[in-house]
Image 1 (tube, rainbow, N blue to C red):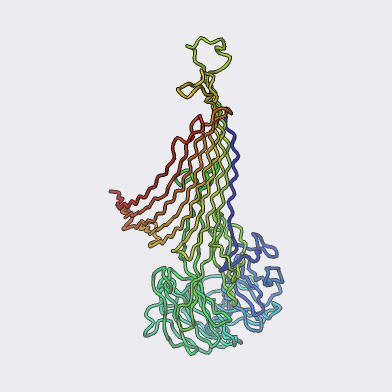
Image 2: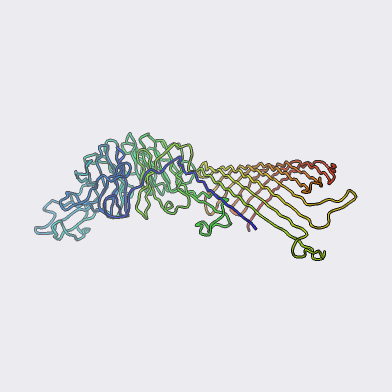
Amino acid sequence: MTFCLLLLLPVPVNAAQEFTFVSAFGEKGAGAAQFAKTLFMAFGPEGAIYVTDTDNFRIQKFNETGAFAFDIQMKAESEFRFINPTDIAIGTDSSIYVMDWMFVEISDAHLREAQGPKIFNYGPCIHKFDAQGVFVASYPIQDLSQRIKPLEAAAPGLDADGNYALIIPQGNTKREFLLAIDLHNNLYVCDRDVPNKLIVKLDANGKTVARYFLDQPGAGHVVQPADMAVDKVGNLYVVDEKGHRVLKYSADGRFERDFGRYGDAAGEFLAPFRIAALTDGTLLVADTAKYLKDFASTLPKRLDDPTRRYDGYTRQFRYRLRRIQRFTTDGTYIQKLLVPFRREVETDVALHLKGIDGQGNLYYLNPAELRFRKYAPTTSLISSLFQTELKLRYTRDLHDVEIDNQDDLDADLYTKSDFDEQIIQDTAYANLIFSYDLNESYRIAVSNRLTYVRMTDTSYYRARDFEDFRGRFNQDDRATENTWDDRIQLDFTWVRDHSLYNYREVRAFAYFSIIRLDFINDALDSFNYRFFDFNANLSDWGAGIHYDFSRTFRLNFEITHFFGRNRYTYIDETNILYATGFQEGDLTRAVLFINGIF
């Protein structure tokens, strides 16, 4: 018969050190604080959040906590028209600027015959709204008042009155633009469709003040501009996603330097896609580097455990790290900020970084729910990369053994046994693990495993009493054993290569354990003085390392040292000291081996 009480307490400590969740807002739909699929984000000087909802043809403003403030929508009487609103920027006076397209009628009468259709240029522009969302003006990126392309390039269309018209598109109408703004409300537009990647700089009133290309001597070819930002003194920073770098241009458009190269080490980039110039004068750059961290738990698996794809009988927790890097304005690497997401939460896997505000707050979008999640930087002493696990277990085992000798022809056949043994064993177990990820590559863990076992074994003999030259004695006895086992272990893991196809790690460990054993056997009969006392103090320590040469070869080296002593005392049935003594042991073992898969 076995009774078992099992208590398992996984204790995750989830207070973020680098970033902490602040608020969430948004959902699918077309109402207030609702969005469609294509979204662009910008931030105001007072911390307000602005979102361009391209598919719903509107702009929404929220306060710093995500509460809806107002929206800008096109109405029948509006002086503007949203055609394909995309990137957005906010001025120091909270004016709102959004990239879009516009129609401009070619006004010169000689360009069209009398009674002929109207002719429109169709080109990119910036719509400006004031701080309250009132339309101010639309600024074309180029002069659309004159016919720029031959009339043969025109496409048929309808004018505002429903009459037949000719529309001349200026370039690929599906191309995307980047928009940034400086402290003087100068606007920077990057036309990524132009071969040399054109930058158009406009003042707050839409007047073009500069035009220059990103491809300049020293800069080389800019493959794919993905984002832009302007610092306090007007320097422009452009993220080259496929070039895995950031380029810096002075306020007058001269290329100064670039920084970054392909890789996931400090100061390197894997397809950077977001940049922000913070109010403290530093730059934050986000790339697509992701790190998977597995935490091997000692907890047993459930039948419905979502991690059953892993081998073995214990659970494994997985969480993901996203990377943000901080730089000075001259491109000097400062620090790496790892953004950890909750373990085993599938909705967190697809979160996409949509914006970084001037204080360094991060805004992630859940594309399935169209819900934004805001994370703020914090200096908490306890990081979300710190994990704990506590496992407690108590068991009680009961055993009853009865033996009846059928050959002794006693009168108690099948009614009373000749030997009866009762065993009771209580086991208490506790295992506490502290694990901390120093960064995406280094993990340190400390564990303490404590086990206590108490066992009592009581034996009753109904056979003839034991008799020798000393006399006759009843041999019923009880053995009691108490064992303490305490083990402390330190583990260190270094992931040398995170690639799924070339994963390599180095793992080192060291431990120390103490075992205390007390065993007593005592006769139950008052006339039998037999007594045996045994105690042992044992210890061992060990250390080891395994090193991955490649995906298929691993070097292992372990060394262990065992030492200790025991003492014993035996008094016989007549209360005479029969034996006493002690033993000592000291053993060292070293093992070196290589595992390989061919």
